[in-house]
Image (cartoon, rainbow, N blue to C red; front, side, top):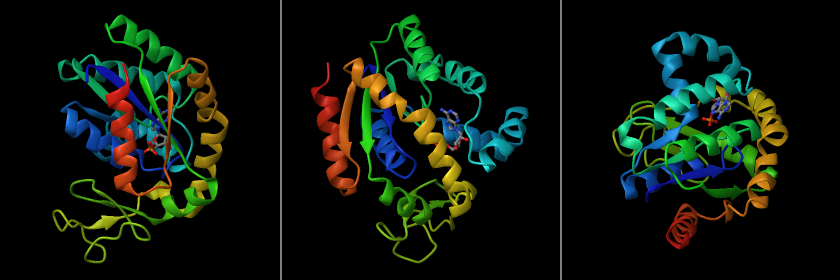
Length: 218
Ligand code: AMP
């Protein structure tokens, strides 16, 4: 792949599921800043202690903390053939910093895949989302239920709801998306980097469209 791919879109649009698959297919790292922060929280690191209350409120972590973590991560050797970002960048400042970082590290400008989803569907997607406690596999009780209620198809792990997927935390998360992340859509559009995906389609259809975009990109 030899490039950075960015998955942009509201929470619940299916970015995580698709980003993991694309990364696996191209054998490059899947870099979810949300997963990285959740790991820091569960390990109780100093960064984890700092971001825990922010995430619990459904707000964005300050750019300075995100950018330091991302820089350290993409400078690791396993990123040398590209990577897939999921949930980053989320502000125009993060996007500007990323373009400098990519240039400094010898990468081409990022390819941006935009998951467009009707706001009415976003709430259903988020509140229906369940995650395997063991392997992180994502389900949706409405659209993609597990074979056995509450258990992961892959490893039988318990399926849990992310604390910030509860209905009362969703509103501030969507507000943060609209105010801070949505401006990135026109930012990347102006740069001619944006490719749209209709995220209301099935996982299979979205997968096909994502692959088409990546294969046709230069
Ligand atoms: P996600 O799993 O991508 O929905 O992220 C979960 C939470 O982690 C977000 O609600 C933010 O609090 C935080 N977070 C993840 N990525 C970023 C980012 N790029 N900038 C700021 N906060 C982030």
